[in-house]
Length: 303
Ligand code: C5P
Image 1: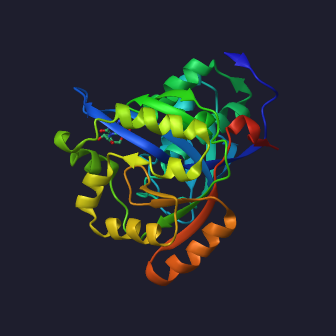
Image 2: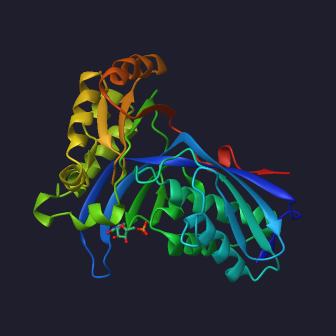
């Protein structure tokens, strides 16, 4: 493994949320996962992570979620880093959660990717990109995407990533974050083969519209095969989507496996106007978020 720059005393790193602008479930696999084709996009709602070297082991402090255990993805990412690299010492992680769990925004996966990248800086290591991707994929299907973020197409169980040019037009997302989260595994378990869109064709159309840059046309092509099972588990979500449409969103979709919902707007002004209307009819949080470019454009802070 190549040493990077000098190790750092501490590293602070943002972990952005993602939305899936399209998500085709192509079928169930023998290993218990589902074969996917998805268009990932990072957005500007971020968790904040501060990493410091410790004498040994991993400790995660998160005021919003006291008592986080070893199953937490940030914890598992640091433990995996220590184990695979064999560096001496430990890591202390201070986690400020802004991305709610169970929203389909990939918060835990993004934290895990940020911890892997941050640990590399903290210990002054630069693993080969393929190794880093393997570590990320061992932590979860969405984790490899978050190593780079931005816009990308995911395939396999979501862990095979091909970068995509950013959407070439103005776009602002408005996220609805309800009180009730959904379990990703439960939503996938509720997928019924007969209810799938036959996704590949829909996905090809979506990609063509993405490249075209006309948000109105892109908005009509959004699709997510997890909506049917998620709406069956949480029937209120269909009404949230309807409210977004009434409030003037150019496209509205479930975030990943839910329970978050996003709407797309052509300007911050249009998103603000819709937020005003939606506040009056929807309980829960409404968060305006920009599409975020790939991490190499904004990075990691060392101190
Ligand atoms: O990979 P990750 O641990 O994030 O996945 C959580 C759960 O979601 C898996 O255990 C699986 O039940 C389901 N899943 C799936 N197909 C995928 C991704 C996740 O069935 N492509």
